[in-house]
Length: 368
Image (cartoon, rainbow, N blue to C red; front, side):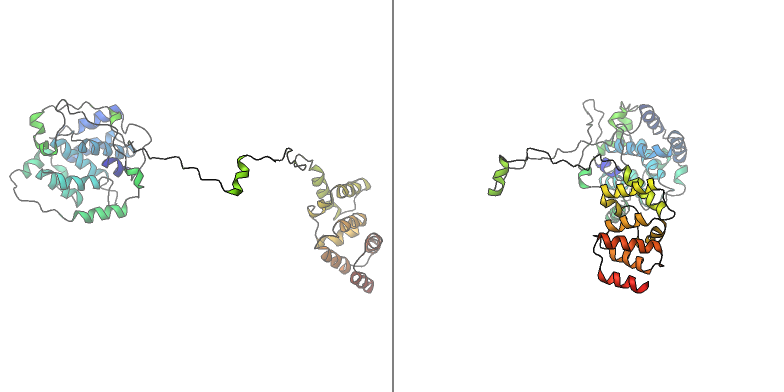
């Protein structure tokens, strides 16, 4: 419905009914007191509805007005409450402005049009203290034709300030249709005569009928047609040669505790000499997995301390790093460290194990 699409701009209602049956009855009773001042009705409204429920109550008022279920005096009360709910919010527009603009254009009731035009601008200071009846009496006999302002300007202002809603969200219609078989439905032109035609005008409404949930059109989603297979795709229609054996990942579920232990022991070996059994754990770990040397936290800066504290481990680490792109940095650290028996032992064992770069050997000897 129009009200549904407008009110959806402010919040989404997840429950089916906007108000409970008890709240709906309280709202209808408030709107049946034309002898009370507008501000007194508003005070009673705020006592019955918390800040969180006032928007929902406003949406219900919109639905009752759009479905022409209210008398002239009840509509006036409803319009005043729609105005007063957001009167002190300091907003450029309210979610109920589109409804007001629509009714200003359509209504033939001069009093109602005068009231709504004041809604759009600013209500007179003395109006809240007036009752609905006194306001209607003040409009009686005033035959002057009310000139409408530029309503499109109000619409543009509302569209600029209101949150945007997708086009699909505003396409739904109210899932409830009022049955006019008992003569309860009233055309807009007969609103001013409702009170005389139906003095009591009982509204037998179910709160579940007043909802923002909409009946939306079903979108056609045809099954896309199948494209003709190309020559390259024909094979996959009936594959004849597929892998009969799965490709196993043999690294899954491998015990990684040894790598953690080796990392901890190398960190310790840089600082202090290790006992033979711990040194052997490092040697065995590097022998089983040479890649552990790249994940044990070893750097060229730590090499001199490792050489001095554990030369055997330093030799094993350097041998595993021979294929690394950083081996030259380790050789530089070894050459620049202070000469000692341990450094000489490391270089000697490396010379017997692998072919060292000649420039490294010459540089090391020149520093001796």
